[in-house]
Length: 133
Image 1 (cartoon, helix red, strand yellow):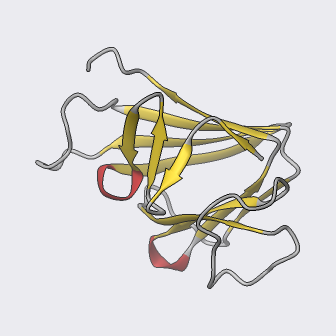
Image 2 (image 1 turned 90 degrees about the vertical axis):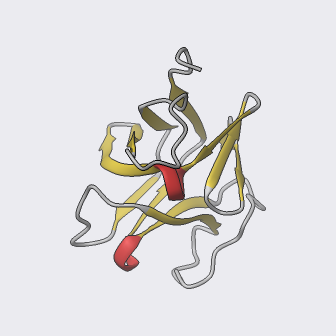
């Protein structure tokens, strides 16, 4: 998978000199797989520690999907506990690779309550409006 961002500390996205803390500052409000694309939509929390200049909404877009799995019973909105990677044939969700070590790896979002979303795709990028910053 080709990422247009990096994942830091298993909870943050880094892109174009900007940091996005998905674990502390955002809730996942929707997860959609439609055709060859998938979208994860995040909304900024209203907590005191969240920077006012961060975007109110973020979307992670995944293109040329070859795998999309959402744990049964996942309730949204929810928070992100951890982001990591899994080799496609590895079903063990207790251990994640911290970095993308093989191009065909799936990205896995571990959610609150031991739920998860697992995506295999060719590319991924972040959509965000930084105009307020």
